[in-house]
Amino acid sequence: MSDGAGADQRRVWYKAAGPGELAEGRVKSVTCGVKTVCLTRFEGAYAALDNRCPHQGGPLGEGSIEKGYLRCPWHGWDFYPTTGRPPCADRRWRESSTSTASVTKGRRRSPARPTGHWRVWQTSLHNPSFAAYAEICGALGIRVTQEEELDDALARALAHDGPSLVEIVSDPDLV
Picture 1 (cartoon, rainbow, N blue to C red):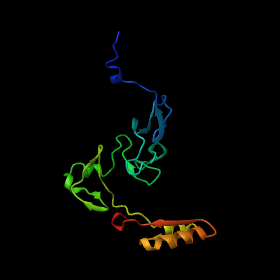
Picture 2 (picture 1 turned 180 degrees about the horizontal axis):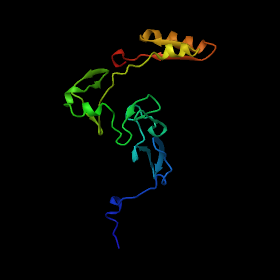
Picture 3 (picture 1 turned 45 degrees about the horizontal axis):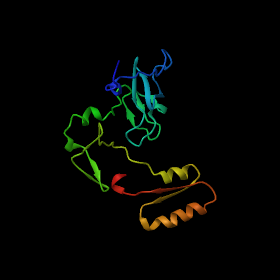
Picture 4 (picture 1 turned 90 degrees about the horizontal axis):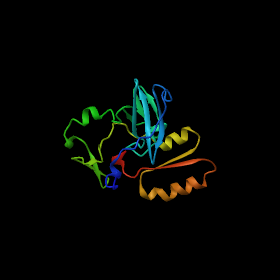
């Protein structure tokens, strides 16, 4: 009979999916106990990854595998579908920590500090103009780059008879 001292250290297995339930090149979110994971099947291998994208928390299990990468549905960030590592990890994880950037008070600096098991990393991808995109879609798009423009922009957006989007650039160094 156990005294319960090691009860919290035992492994508990959950059935994530049955054989053939996940087709090749597909992903899905699976809840195992209280944890939701991103289940992937790629090149015959299965993997259970953290379902939360390290970029901004998007649900990776709702993403897709495109051109060999697991793509986050929120912002299109790519990861290897069986390891969860980003493609830049091949290069950046081997470099010294002084080659990556981190952010302190809105300014870039080095060396980077680890964030959990993920290093602070960036891509060369630049954000599009969301205000311009809104205009293309037929909405009112307003881009605010100066604090003094904000009140007028919000008033214009709220007074507009139709959909509107106010894009606020809070730190141009981060865009």
